[in-house]
View 1 (cartoon, rainbow, N blue to C red):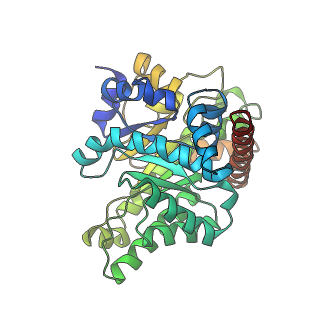
View 2 (tube, helix red, strand yellow):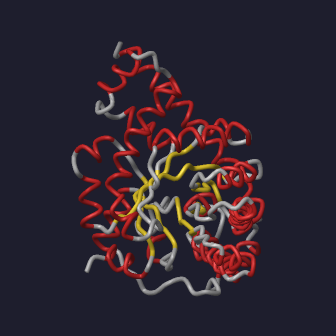
Length: 358
């Protein structure tokens, strides 16, 4: 049995953190579903920037869309929705088989709207309607400014992937925004069955600290943050507040481990997969990490309910000079900025291709 199948059987969903037209056209994504137990997919501006810039697969469609008068952001979302609608259709049988718990794909709102609640919600609604797929998540950043947009999108019935979460506190704020949206739906007599995942970024913790701590602590912070947040996730699901919502028909906002490609060349290429195995969660993996785990991954168990020794590890990082709370805030700010930079690169690439293909 492949390690990916073992992980799937433990109850963790394996999603691919990539999308390209070539993955779809070649049948590779379909093969990953069949052979590597992949049950969903995520995307972001960086992924689309790389896909469109480094491939000719989009050229004929860009030429056609330019001919219809589309450009810039409008043209990009047309391309992205085409890809993600095709991927969503591949995952539709899984979505149905799991009673709509799994089989999702994700599309991000413009990162330029990260601090603009009103326009984030409007774009989330528009993209969700445009794709017209029940298994599409709209990604909204879990920043302080993003929380009202998450709540409003959920209240509006839009399934949300809360992205750019880096800490337990970020996760709890996202869970509370989700529950507020559902509570408003219940109060309005609407179904609270609106799905969400909360995406916790892992590897950037270790990238930021690997050269600032003793070798004994290297590559331990990301896993500890994941374990600590998993404990908080279980606490939320066992809370009276959540139990009331579940009794009204709500389904859990699942914790998703993101940014799980290893950044340290000295560490295992599947460091964050086996270490973060846990039921009723998701791990979205870069393609090379997925393939590596399928080939030589191992699982020794699941994250303990109490988060294992995460608090001891976090205390150790404080002892050697890492302000974990401040670093979490900085990583979220840097993450939002990096997505804006990728978005600008993406818009520039589309503009360049559009002119060349006229």
